[in-house]
Image (cartoon, rainbow, N blue to C red; front, side, top):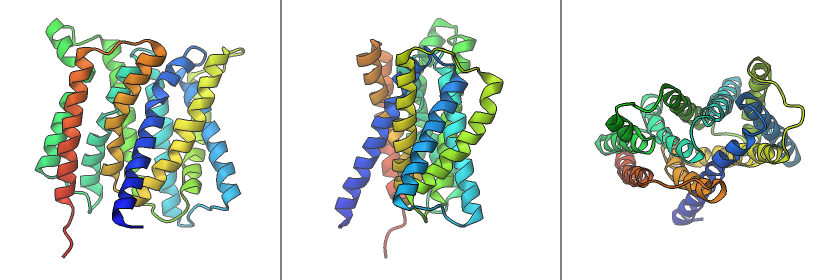
Length: 305
């Protein structure tokens, strides 16, 4: 297979990841009608861990024998599932699905900074830095910060706290990607299963301290929780691990610039949310940031001699 074909496969996997993760936000909003954030996080992670473990066993895949790699997989699961799933579900009690999706555009910015610090092959140049700064402006616009400054209320403390929780979840995704990049040998499904088992253990232990399981949750909320466990938590984890075995964390993180349009579109179609001029401007800034960041990433790559 030539490089062009491999590149098309990678782009296709990136788009798949964006669609699966972008679809999570309206499903989280639906699940919140019957479950609290900690129950949603524990439920979707546990379902994903069961699904991935069964798939790995059926395919005969095993986790790497390197103990350091196993610890990295465990921490990748905690930082990339336990932490963000709880924080994002908690934040979405106060913000819309569209806003939650757009805030996740912080992930490429955090990934680029962490990759520069911890991965030798990923350097932070001028163009990439410009993309990061523009991306921050895009995120701020999408979150409504300029409008809040004009109104002189900077949103509300509760709203800002919710935004901060979602942004912290985005940082967890970035840190998880850096850890996964350092574990390149082994089956993608087995590694995804190992991640989710560690995340499920932490979530199930912590959940009782923050939530209680409802006796009779509504059926739509149950179905939404099942979808969250199988698709954006389970199948998406396989795609994520496979992509990080093939490409750099900065490339994989670019899917988060595609997640906001998906999340906004699904929020409009499924939940009846409206798209504002602010969101359109923010998305434009993020697309421009994406172009600058990708140009900077390519320029920073060592040239073949």
